[in-house]
Length: 355
Image: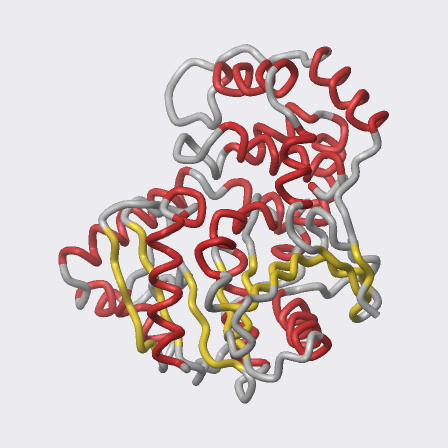
């Protein structure tokens, strides 16, 4: 059963949030560089969150689109569902990443809804979907829930797009439901080099440069992934209590390339729904690459400033059906926010060929 849904945060929750923001105890800046999110950046955003940011405006932006929940595998799944005016439009399910939410894809709706029926779910444990009450909600189980969701909506042939964690889920959906999937389009292929020096030696200069970016990220900015993959409950105690802490934790993967309002909307969703811990479960419950490659047609859009660049020879090692690969000279890890038209055009081009 599909139940209509609206985001309606009680005012007392917002009042509590405002009081906690006003009482924030900011940490002192540490000496040195590269030590994490700067203290002055967090202080600036907390002050704006308290005095300038309008949650109700963000709520209205989300509620401008039809939303529903349905129970799948014992868990409520929240999703936006925007039907195209074209009856023969291709259904497309878009899966957000971490620390994002369905808000990630709001800029794509007007750009894609002429040609696609859009389904934009909240990943289980994130935002407005239910939180897992048992272990095992890894990307394969989420992909199985997506396949069931599309079946319930009456979509027997459809496409999938994902970013960040959503890329991993979308790839798994292609493996799980290959006879119904027209194609999978992603913005990252998380293919890492093996320990074989010969594999590295075969990479050309451009791919060596991408590998250097990737290795810098893993060496200097991946602590969040280690903690979420090993101690999500420990982390959740701190973030559930402190909205400023939630903001700082999210901010490490947002940087300066997206708007302050977008950053705060996502931080607010995580804090107001108490999903800091449950959103980490997707890493904790296992996301090792599967042994078998996917045979579903795969398209990749690579954006120049993505801190986790896709390296084509490594991607082709792990995926046998890459039929579309575009590299752009702008945009980054949050392409739907940074370069929505560029991303929408790439999605459209890929799926036009799949029709």
